[in-house]
Length: 123
Image (cartoon, rainbow, N blue to C red; front, side):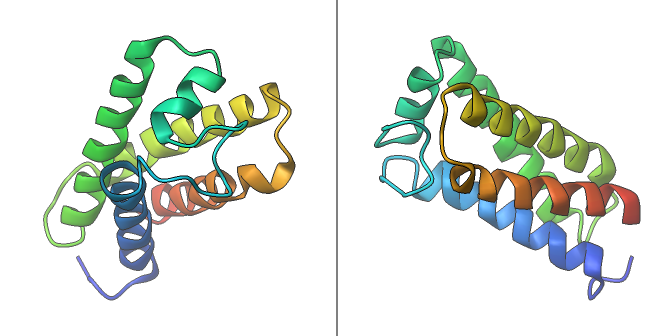
């Protein structure tokens, strides 16, 4: 597998972006947080999701991120990982709309969705 390809670049961007959100910035307020939430866990509460959803979504996103990153060098199920991320981003956009967030708050999820779909198509 050629590691200097568009798919590989997108895998690194999506993978590192997910790890950044979930492992580095999860407790930080950002302008893209849903509703008036100040933390990632607070977003899930603002969306009215059950408590376990935070941990389930986090595990799926961190796992998919690791596969996307390692998949640049190793034969891993990258297409499937990108599909999981795409599905989760559709859900993220849906809950932003559900709580009446301005469209700009859905921008990161929309970009991750577009990149994940591109990865799945290219791989």
